Image 1 (cartoon, rainbow, N blue to C red):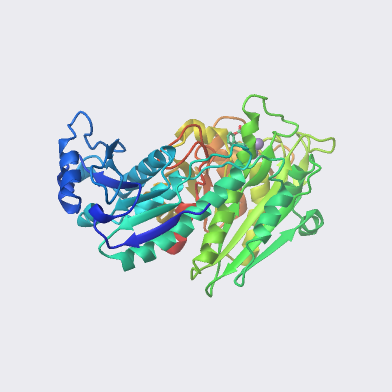
Image 2: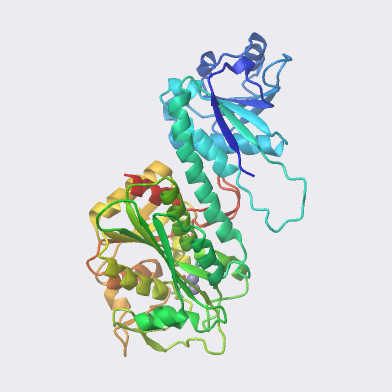
Length: 484
Ligand code: BES
Ligand code: MN
Ligand code: ZN
């Protein structure tokens, strides 16, 4: 299953593999950095501009003439040299690796030499390759699956690169871990299964506690439990605590609705099957906790997954019902399909008991988010400029982009209830921001940021390093944030 990565200080011409990837920019001047055989260099020079122009993610396969060294060479385009970015490396890495996998190659190599000459780390290229090679085959009985087994990186500084790549590998496997959880259908990925998965991450510095319905009742989590009422699957409020340093913790809250039918405010049938991905926030948090502990990061992080299904069973919460949340606020439930904010509100209330440095919640909260931003960015809202700025920086680093939306105080009006302290929905107008404003009312003055990933957690068609399906968004973004 796992892809082996090796770094070697050998020349391109003598590297032993089925196919060697040669990244090139449009000017093709980079060719001089590769120690290819005379024949191979000749063949590449002969490819006319109509065959390979070096545009971003363009690929061209060449059959090597010599009997030693790589059997094939795959040229991959990086675009214009002046416009190169680390994101383009990720994309070219994903594109070329997937191309070779689909050709049935198992043992491939990539040369880092030209990238090094541009002061670019090939770790991003490999990151893209590892993320792009992800596939979810748990429910397919097909036996002959193409799979890359080994990637060799040719470099003049193997030591340094080796270290970077081991982090890259851990991060990519945590993204794959999160994607697996999201892609798994809800009949298997129940709140209990999510809890078992969390418990499997238990380590020396990582404690895992699972609160059941009774515990949640005692804590007064009426908003969370209101969502769980309509389902026979027992709710699990999952808490992971990683201690790698002293001081106040960061708390990460991931929305973990393992299936969102809408409840009594039932969703339309069309597309409802996708609502298994309503736990993508929780999956991201588990992926982050896994990586944090494997990388032994010097931080304190608490991960919280309020997990439950949202179903319209006979005991389900009904529109108009009023419940009491953990911090004593009464919430009128206007729409049972606005369940995410209910479970996160109680999780925020619970999180504040830890006196956290900051709370970040990540949730597939509103359809309005994908309408506003498509699948190109997560919506971000929060009450603390420094925190928002840091996340923006990490979003740039990882290309898990965020776009800030406002929390105007006028939105408070939208959430006024006639009989309770607050209502959970004010209809469609502004629902991306009012959902966040609802959470803001629970975060109070604790530094807090909300990330709505409804549009980005699931991709409808393959991207260069995100195959169709669960994207695993949030894992790389928040890991970068925690590392800085
Ligand atoms: N999980 C959904 C949001 C969602 C929709 C995520 C589509 C991914 C794709 C959320 O619980 C929800 O149903 N939100 C409602 C809120 C509304 C009732 C105020 C929505 O956005 O329609
Ligand atoms: Mn819903
Ligand atoms: Zn939902």
